[in-house]
View 1 (cartoon, helix red, strand yellow):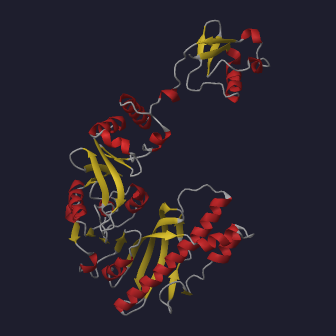
View 2 (cartoon, rainbow, N blue to C red):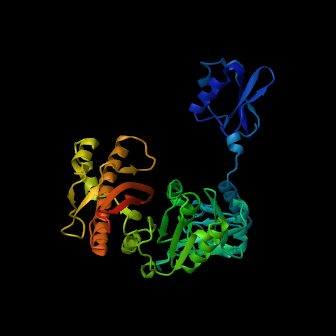
View 3 (cartoon, rainbow, N blue to C red):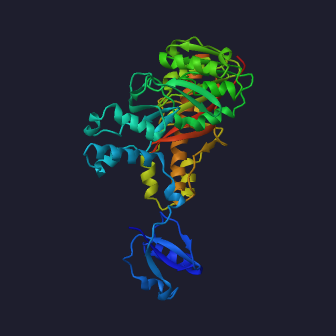
Length: 447
């Protein structure tokens, strides 16, 4: 049974607002004009005090009727998630099973789409009741979400290759196609990672001017960064290192798909065993949680006479003790920022937390630009930015000292490391951010 309140059209919106405040208005259905210059307003029930409307319109002009009104545009929109939930409900009813809150919580509320393949999160479909449905369940999931194949994530293997643990639930193979910023990729989701969260860094690389430059990509994967360097940044040549054979297979295909196979040399195996010396204007170290094992390789790869730029990825944890101090401090964010974060730039800067006890290095960080990501400018976010600036700057200076020491030890001459930019790629976990440090490294004298 559906109900509506019929009122003179001139009072329709005022009455609708009162009904909304009374939590009686049925927003899932449209208002409808009817004969006699009146409007029918949908309501959830006829059991409400109509006297609340009398201050606006006389009671004699009001009428509650049985009437089914058309669905509103908002209610008429059926999302893929709605389709999935409705289809699962029907499946359970057909099988004499109950739709419960426990079942609802076991269904996915997000997923990744890779071409015609849906990749479900590991947290979904964990109840034992699903096991009895077999392939029928996954066909329903595929149809509801508009795909042909279904796979499910698990944790990433700790095998050095960062191989995803993915089970193919429906379909013959895991090879998919993806277009990202006009770049084409193909890969097997059961064997290779495609990090959608790194899109901001791919876009940033695409805006680099690498004309005439030689780039070394120490952790190339399927070409997430290699391809943007070649296609959009116009690098002259990229030397791509990768030790996962499945990723190398995809990388070769992706170079061909983007017609840059002649501008890339692939080195299959451990990049620490690759002979890349005095060759790079720029080195990409795109490995998290840390790329430190590749720092010496990167230093050796930089051009000996001119140096170059290192793009160093890492997961960085904000300083918890600093956060606690600031939460209890009476100082403003600006005062704390000045007290804790002002740096004596272009001078000898010691760094107590680094492993080099006698390290003193020229760190040019006066005009460092930091991308914090999108945050509203309220007091809490301002404090978070201050904490992040301190923690991220501390990490960047520590990395700079270590890199400079590696360069000095290898080349036996002095080098200057300039922190150019800290990019916040994404939040990886609470108080943990995936950052990229752009570090310019130049020899102080001609070698």
